[in-house]
Length: 262
Image (cartoon, rainbow, N blue to C red; front, side):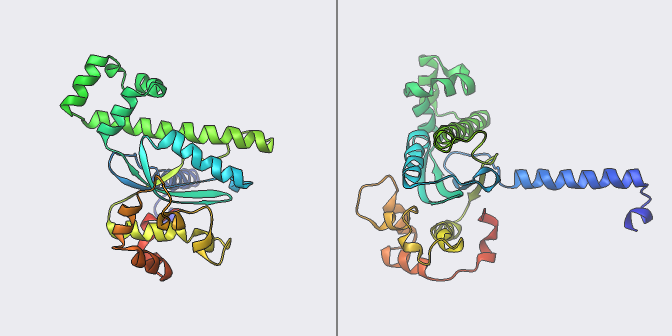
């Protein structure tokens, strides 16, 4: 009736419905695909294609964490994680543009990334002058964003090859594109850590989040050496006691819905 009163013919109505559908799909795809930028924090999420599992045995979880270190630790710092059989959550801090560029320039394994994304700086003298000047502009940031996304792709591909071989499967293991949402306040940061660590309870895998092996909750409290920035994380809660207390309380999920991806 609305279409008729607005003067739409049947064909016009069909076209309008298609346009609305396309808009909804595009909006859903772009809502959680922000460009990754230096010195920002992000909630990173991905799940198995068609809801398939990503992890089948203990060694898969261990291998996944090893691959994060291998492919991503030069570009970001993981503050929290949780690995669930068919998906994962990360809270990451992207390193500074200078740190990332220095890494790309100095490590042989990133020559391909450099040649494809910053070809004008392959010359050693040019790259040295560039780093010294610190003149990183919008174009540089756009290229770094591409580099970061590409490195995530390499990470997913490497892990997928192992699981596909193990499970005798073919095709994409992960959904595309992976989702990410920037975190812009200390309050959101604290809640996201809570949310990530409570994921096993949320999905009915455990009654007690604190004993789930494949989250960072206990690792942050542990005295064992780790790449997690434990002191920085704890300081956001003031101390260990408040870190534990904050996790034990219920929080208003509706208040933080903008940073949640699931």
